[in-house]
Length: 393
Ligand SMILES: Cc1cc2nc3c(=O)[nH]c(=O)nc-3n(C[C@H](O)[C@H](O)[C@H](O)COP(=O)(O)OP(=O)(O)OC[C@H]3O[C@@H](n4cnc5c(N)ncnc54)[C@H](O)[C@@H]3O)c2cc1C
Image (cartoon, rainbow, N blue to C red; front, side):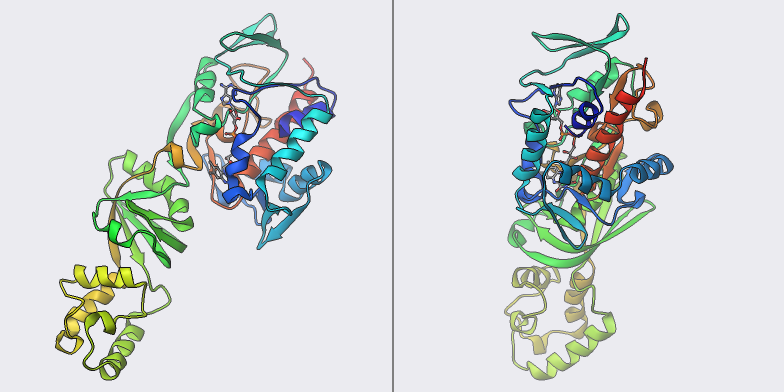
């Protein structure tokens, strides 16, 4: 839609062919229904890409201010929270609505329930075919998304189209997704949310994220886990053993803990271990760690050795869990991997078929959580929308 609006404003006649019943369904589920549509703090470091230099020039070409202007022109009021951009209404549907109103008002033809299956060169144009329809266009922009959240229409069929015209696809994995752990005890702590520093250790990798950790029936989730998930999935793809080391007390040093333990031993004479450890972490976690340390919640703290108490603390500081997988594309926010950037031009034109452009999540670029993936969709869309009207052939 960003590409279509840009191209039509510059004089092109544009048709959008959408496989689903309506345009932009995925936008409605973004940002927990609020749509985090961009970020003031935008840099190439917010993206995984094989081409950082090029990425930088794309982000310079369409900055956050450009995205804000693009949406303001469509009538969207935007607010910022710590740099994160949202519609003022805090409703993702407002973002979709202004895009829908925009394409309609500008006279873009929209054909829904038109899943494109074939693409080929024909008589100097590009032939596009669904099961029952066929079109010949001068230029085509493929904006089919990746494989994440296939219910919203992005089922990976864009990769098949890209392959038809000769592109290769960098291996894809689900990204911004929950991770699953080997340990069976997660059911006991599911639902807990707590601040944590999470370090992924695997082979030579040592990746770190801090933020609110969420524990699920199968493993770990929350923003810091989402941020790590694509790298973890690539490591798992290489059959690496992946361990997450979780520090649930990232602001407390071992020395400080020693001091706390000492003072609590004096203060809390006669208490059970459950009582002794009350108020340090979420109770469910503390009970789990007491058990993992080989102790009982009902044991008297006084009769527990210092070394055993330290063992419990070690779990708080260095809880090690083994990651065996992630949730599937169904619940992933983004696809990592995709059409290789080496095979497209600076204006997103295919290096394999002139007149075809590829944009958004189809490409081998994935952003961190924080509005970066939508920024990429708008940014690549606007640049390609300009390019199709720039180049006369
Ligand atoms: C739950 C969730 C929350 C998210 N939250 C955020 C967020 O807050 N901020 C952020 O920046 N990013 C977020 N994202 C990621 C972001 O939504 C995507 O990266 C972005 O929508 C990708 O845009 P796109 O246009 O490339 O692809 P998509 O938005 O996936 O659109 C692709 C479109 O192409 C259509 N299509 C696919 N194949 C065909 C075909 N063969 N023929 C015809 N039509 C086809 C699909 O039906 C779909 O409408 C979230 C994603 C999810 C799933």
